[in-house]
Length: 385
Image 1: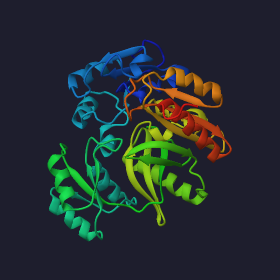
Image 2 (image 1 turned 30 degrees about the vertical axis):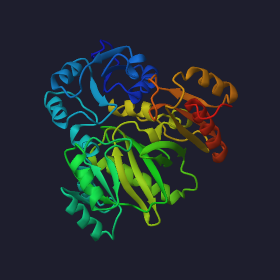
Image 3 (image 1 turned 60 degrees about the vertical axis):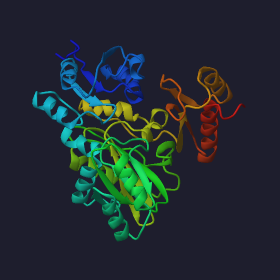
């Protein structure tokens, strides 16, 4: 008997953001009950998931009480203290991905160390503790600028600084309140890619089409699936790299491997062990969405088909702008272009905040980009037609 009292299990999701929210629809279809640990009753997932606990994910007792009502725990973010997750596992809680895998998405320094052991292609990098360390690294890689990253806590461009000299490095290291830093070469990439895979505890894994992402100030703005013009060999190289990382690290659930595409091949930039912004296109453009496959994976169900349904899907994020009330603009976009799929997150609109995304599916990528961009701009209040 499961924690729900029926044959179907309860999946506990730590975090009440839009990723947890978007797990609800496939959970309904799968017959799976979600239980969300949210910061408040107003969180994105709290508005659509029936079973919600409000509490602090940084408090171990709160996590223990939450886990008592779940058959398996998973995440909508990677910020739960690693020691807390080990304590839960030691107490018999099923945590997926487990802390021994998740730590490589939580700590960029550990990630870089581990990927080096695996022989995965990564930028030149080094742990640093002072501006002199950064300057020495810059000399070794041929000069400034270089990239300083917080080892923990960064996301959507936060915790990443491009510095042009020792003074800039000193300012970052003296003012940023983070536990540690690393420095990387500034990679001369041609574009950014994301290779997403799902992996179950039994070792089954599937790979989604490799996509191109457009990043603006560290925030993913657009995704083109599959990456336009990518060769089959190049796509397979990226997919195989992601599958190998998932297997070697023991990932369970979704893994996003964000990559730099360079003239010499792909280079691993970041890892995320959860559904990811670069996979939102699959809600309308793939046989099985990343949210469904994440639930299937953490429950060790057979994984779904990740195949694309059309030659291209374009996703554009809706960032908060001048429209505090999205609904009138939402109605306009639906009437103007019935082929759009607009997903909103139930968030209060704030400038630059991700409040939804637009998907559009079809044959001509340039036309899809124009349509999705127009809708996202209208929803921001940037255009009035």
